[in-house]
Amino acid sequence: MNTPTYSITKVYNDIRGGGNRVGWHHFVWSKLTIHRSRFIAWLAFNNRLKTKHRLKLTEIVESDTCSICYLESETLNHIFFQCRFSQECVAYLKERYETNNTIETLEDTLKRNQMGRQKRRQFEAILCNLIYAIWSARDEALWSHKVPMVKLVVDNVIDTSETKFKFSASLRFDST
Ligand SMILES: [Zn+2]
Image (cartoon, rainbow, N blue to C red; front, top):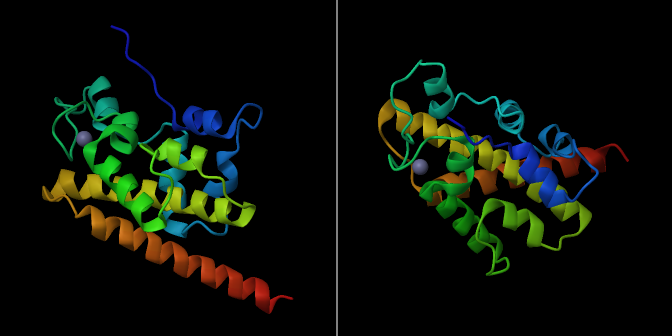
């Protein structure tokens, strides 16, 4: 049976346009990205997160149903881009940032925003932090059978990200 393969790296490279094949390194390891988000984002971009889909292929679990919505196979694509939970996270993130109404998905959020360099770097860091938050929500759903509220998750991502941006800016200011 053919199993569709998915790579966040590919999606991200598509978003960024051709040529820069490892562009995601810049924001996964960016000083603006919250430390605890980096490793999970790195695993996600390297297609190494242990989703249920992946665990089922190696017969570690019997069912690969999404831990959050119980509707589809828990692939990386589903968890981060197709699951209703992640789609609602993106929709609320968009609302908080009052961005373009045509944005439907996480990848559109990056692609369609015409941002300045600093704003884009910040948004890329927020993307990493959101990847971590969605994966944490998935863990919570898997182990505690509770799905956190979208608003709480995204508000926390934005608040912690903005605190980090201010901290980074203060360090830059101090060093000059
Ligand atoms: Zn789901």
